[in-house]
Amino acid sequence: MFIHCKFISVTWPVFLLLALVCQKKEIKEDPLAGMEKSFHAYVENLPPLEPVDLKAKHTLNVLYVEDGAMPDLPEPRKLFALTEKLAREYLDLKVQFKLSGREPIDRFFERCEERFNHPVTSYPIQGWHLSFADPDLARQVEPAILRVLRSHDVDLIEATFGPRGDSEALYISQIARQFVKKNQAIYSERNREGKELRHIPALTRQTAFAYWDALLYQEKEADFIVTNTILAAPDRTMPLYVINRGGITSGFVENNEYRPYRGAGMLALYPFLSDGPFFIAERGNYTAEEKLETIAFLWLHELGHLLLRKQENYTLNGSVHRAAIDLNYRGWVKGIKKHHKQIKEEVPVVKYF
Ligand SMILES: [Zn+2]
Image (cartoon, rainbow, N blue to C red; front, side, top):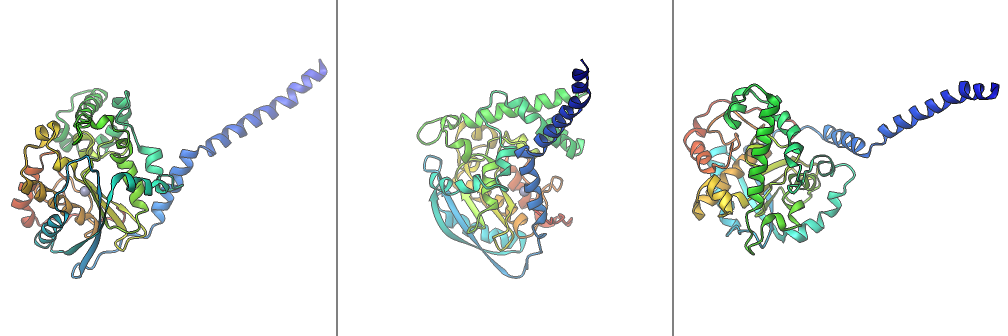
């Protein structure tokens, strides 16, 4: 009895201590939390962006990554020439694109395998990526919607998603349901072989922002990657417009320590090139010329990020620095042609993309 009591009085605190130490250790060694920390530390330790010499001529390397089963961009060089002309006219930038290569998307993704397993910069994949096939997708995207609701004025939120009502929880679940409906309609489009996009396993990665984000961090040759696939797989960091478009990112620029402008960008052209039912309904029917011109204006928007260091803009109607709010790209281009050159207000610059 005495021994037993002694055991209790001395050994139990030791057990408790051990249990606490193990618990603490477990928290410390959560691989995802550790990776998130190193990822943020990596980004914060990159040197801040310097302004670019706007009088100089800027030659940008472009890699064209092709999905043979998706609608094709007919002549990349025609797009280059038009974007160069519009960059001069709207941004006062002398830009020259150089096609550094064309590569099938399967081979490109194989080549990027190492980047998808990078111990630090593949964090977007491990931390943010969501599957478009997840049956619980509506609930999975709710935190992303909440983040967006918290970061914008109510006017912009209501102009985008409709009147808010009394219950935030209800509002979020309505937006989430609407998102899933659009996202499913997007993945019900068919490729040139007649296959629904949802049934093509490779697209789980190839259409995911998180995978493209991770690969752009480690891109060493191209300033822009242009691809004819679609970026529509959901993730936990989707901004306002991406949520409103049902998951579609038309293009973006990411920090990159290897490229001369300290950033690398990409354009995903399927939403412009597709004549599928979702895009015809949301965007309208575009002629080949309209498709090309819309893509060129999208590229100007991305050049605004890469070369002018412009922040994402949500308020300047008619500015090329304001991303298209939905898939009405025709209206977006019309607004830019009418207003962009008259806008006096400066869009702030960023220190990191
Ligand atoms: Zn943007």
